Length: 346
Image (cartoon, rainbow, N blue to C red; front, side):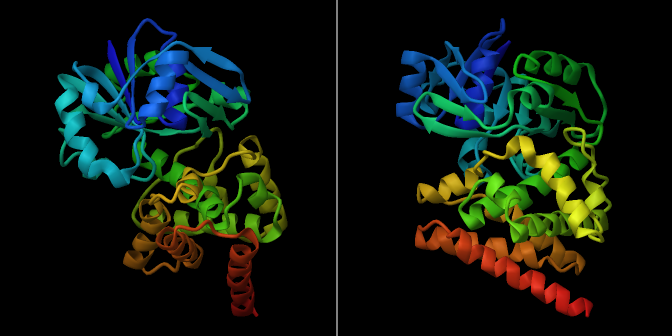
């Protein structure tokens, strides 16, 4: 099987390193030429919660000279207009695109790639780009090996091809097949919108959010907003990494629920959101496809989403000014929302 990892950044480098240990033919594809050159010269190096090294084959998109049976799509949604026509051209006629992008982009992807060639999934581990050829695994290794990916057919049917792909991808880590892919994607969106959104909006790690009273309460309310918006559309959430996030739909015991949320997220304490890494590099983020999606759907369903709105506001301003938000300033903004909620309850 010819496999392409399209978007071999922090996550893709880790997936490529492990997949390259299998019997499959694996190419890591990325536009970062320095990164590609280092991968070819020195192999992929994984640090952080594990020390791992693997020889890989890496190329830039202009050097692609074959068709692929399976393409793992890991680029950001903001590049889809440019990336998807390339994917269409490099897929075999019976090839499969596995969308692993954040958010819920599959409807848009199907406008370019035939729907029957698309499966989707969610990445359940975290990573940061350290330097060319090197990626840091920020999720604990045991968690990564138990819960790396969820994948599923768009119609929820557990087919033979999804079982075959699961078997291939298990060279990376634990892979679960979902019969409710949209519920899986929304479960992942709850984490992206809360901890990734706050990480970007506050310029900090997940652990910094967890250790701050306002930060962890804000994460809780962001999850609650996402659940209410999705359920209004008839979305049924899936268990993710053994966790049922719908327990946070109604916030009625702050102390107990924040303690529970901290326990759930502890293995990701060291993670910095990829959106924060984008801001640090002066790049555009996916904020409008993550917190912006929740905020937009909240508007459509008449559900208030003040926390998601604030994250979109802060990150958008940082993008425009090419700055990184300051923790104390952003936390003060979320503290104001918490106080406003308390006043409404009096």
